[in-house]
Image (tube, rainbow, N blue to C red):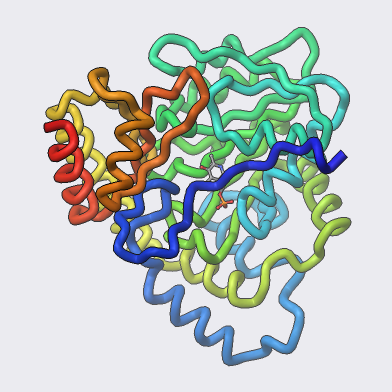
Amino acid sequence: MVAGLVPYVPGEQPKLVKLTKLNTNENPYPPSPQVVAAIQTAAEQGLQLYPDPESVALRTEIARQYGLQMDQVFIGNSSDEVLAHAFFALFQQGAPLVMPDVTYSFYQVYCGLYGIPMHIVPLAEGLRVDVEMLTAPELAGVVIANPNAPTGIGLPLAQIERLLQIHPQHAVLVDEAYVDFGGESAVGLIARYPNLLVTQTLSKSRSLAGLRVGLACGQRPLIEALERVKNSFNSYPLGRLAQAGALAAFEDQAYFAQTCAAVVHSREGLVLQLEDMGFEVLPSQANFVFARQPQFDAAELAAQLRARAVLVRHFKQARIAQYLRISVGTPAQCDTLLEALAAILG
Ligand SMILES: *Cc1c(COP(=O)(O)O)cnc(C)c1O
């Protein structure tokens, strides 16, 4: 059975240091200094002891900021792990899970792992998700990323609400990995929609890809289902350092706001400059842009960028094979990218 699994292939994590790494949507800025200090303190106290299995301090702070109860927040060792638990807990009913045909590729991987059939819905014009089409005669639920990956296109909250209303009897999982870069979060809908589960990660907007912390928010029955799976798998998914660092990241709101704004500002400049070079850039609400140059093959362009020590992500999937996904870097990294592109495009 395992021999038939098709695993997710993460973007390259190069060992070379001189590369400009714009291929895996990490934050170009380091985490808040308060995060580093909190991890240092945690490292000096009690590492011989197991961590809090329920991450209560962290969940309490997230609940406070999001206007939820602490027990409406679930924490996992990365949002990929949270997603895996959610798929296991909510979607193994025999009926297909509905998702758009261009989205985060890990969803299909989890369906393969758990034997969940899929109902894949084509995108509408301009690689947009049409929520009216996200349905099937029979379904186990719906999963979407908002903003979507790898397009970067965000759906307005009214569209998410519409999706929840179309499927009152089914769990709707909204993956908000990129929401802090200008999207609209559905967390405020949780009180009114028992079928809504929202997942987020600290990997992107909180600069903590290396710490591996993700979360889910929803009403008790959905969160309780996740807790059952978690406690049947690993009761201590987050170590002491991760809990301390994640808590400090949520507490340092000013740093969070400042780094998100810097990324959004760089994105806006990058879009204009790519357009000047003849790229078509999809409207992005994420920390990356999805763009194509009609005169240049995308795989070739990615290879030539790589030869110039700039990494971007290219997907071979037919519908998007002419696009490049470019993470928004620091202003200096964006300049390096644009200089390399200028040299290649001539
Ligand atoms: C990056 C990403 C994740 C995974 O985040 P981790 O917490 O680092 O596992 C989940 N969903 C989407 C859409 C992502 O882009």
